[in-house]
Image (cartoon, rainbow, N blue to C red; front, side, top):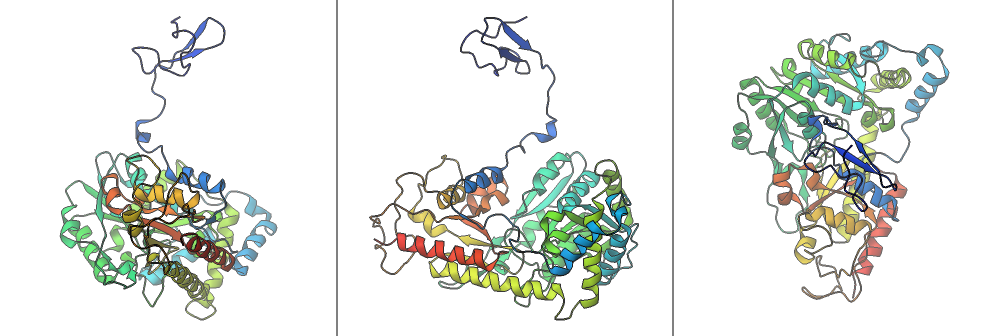
Length: 487
């Protein structure tokens, strides 16, 4: 038995000369060696264990904040969806048991019929539809099924933050290409439509090793809805280089201002190389149900079914039954004023407009989204005037700013970052310590690859998929904060 080094030695420290051997030391003079010569964690977990969401959610829970960070509705799903779920729970007792591994038959049937019309395809419920544990499950299954060691996956930034770690866990290499904002005129309200891909830069990312491209439209966190010309560019490159497109379209029903969502799988030549991912949580405002799906050709889906049957195997039956019944109801009303897919975006657009106006009223600069739950806010004015917020030297500015917003730490004083009437002139300090904003946001840099985070660390993300009472609480926080900035 090897000694650990005696009193005062960290009992969790590795033994000298062997980083894989852990030593345990008790109060008694004797030390106990715990031999752990084998590596515990799989190498595919290296570098993806830290999640900034955990830290931010914990910080927000410890302060009096309005949670505009996390993307979920704080209002109930539609009555017909709740009734469908209640019926699934209290009705047929066999819904408490297993159903078909790849999807509850009434659900796969209605998904095939409903989306087949939209995609211009005759979908086979058994071959072209796979029901998963949320869209997250669909994405994970797709990466595991199709991405091999050394394969490259093109990811458009900003990106939903699971794409990169899922690529890495499958053994692939993420290759990033950024949407870049176009300049706006002074005083002009910016829009997510101004963020564009450089066609030459995008084309340069394709190599013989490129296996897949991930397309998220409407985009999280930006809210961009890709136009038909933009989709045609992506489609052309995917076909030219024989690349699969993984299309994350969970926000497809949440599109505003007369913009139109177009599924890339509906474009000529793309059905055979596209996986289209959807979410009942986003579709029916019930994110906790965790029912998702992926649509695609059998030549792709058969490999996802292999992963599914050897991992999840089966998704909860009752939630699938509720989603099936909800889609059946929606199919009867589709395109009519009574359709939830008509009513929901109208209501959410009003919430979006409320948030935009409220943010503008205190001098903040929102970027108006074309779709999704989210908008981002440009805080570069703050970065110029308040560059030294507390935090680690290498920590992106937006992360420090979000923490300051949640809970002010340290003797920070506010310069005139915003042009409030009655605030100190430029370069003067307010006489009052900076007041925390009391709102939880998400730093947008976490949606970018590490080399690009510093380039986009002056944006934060808010969720406007919220009840009117939450938005009013936001208004009060913003106005109180504005008053606190006065001399």
